[in-house]
Amino acid sequence: MWVTAFGVLGAIIGSFLATIAIRWPQGRSVKYGRSSCDGCTRTLRGSELVPLWSWLVTRGRCRTCGARIDPLHPLIEAGCALVGMAAALVAPPAIALAGAAFGWLLLVLAVMDARDFWLPDPLVTALALVAAAGAWVAPPALGERLIGAAGGFAVLWAIGAGYRRWRRREGLGGGDPKLFGAIGLALGWRMLPAVLLVAGLVGLGWVVFQKARGQAVAADDALPLGTLLAIAAYPAWLLMVGMAA
Image (cartoon, rainbow, N blue to C red; front, side):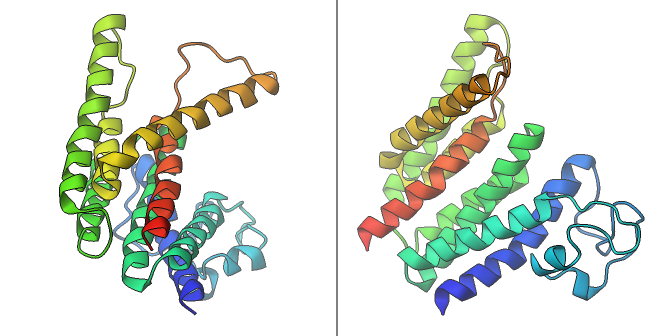
């Protein structure tokens, strides 16, 4: 029952987060105005806003103009549903809710960094607040979390500063240290080396995959580090909580 409930809740929250991921980088408001078709601007009815189901029924297109609905909508909704279900599988409800909220925010940040190389400060701050609130119900202890927050930020900030001094150009986005600090606040300092290692391996795997497809990959091509960190961080939370249980 809890797994299903968290999956449904995740899909609902994912519908809102998908709107953020799509509208915000375009400079469109995510606070005001009813949902509308991006093609003909027709205001959508409630029956057209049911997460996942509406997209399946309409086959991913507006009923009026036939414009293609951004596939990020169902992908983020499905992703948030899976995040919620995974949290409910490994933890009791209170801890699962804290972990699911952590995962939902990681997901939208991962998408925005992958598409736009942008980690908005308000979302990273929200992630940090969720991580801090999780200390009331889930491991690790607050002290380990605070060390993780400071250490995570400091490590990536130092790497970015060192690269900038060495190569005379930016090599790390300003949001990456903040995100790693928020992840450290959620996971504690002990998990950070593993998260950074897995993120690096995922990035390396992506480069190898691109080269295998025949895509040219240059040494100075940018990779969304925030996305890689998010991909590594949520499984780390599931593992940590599952072992503690």
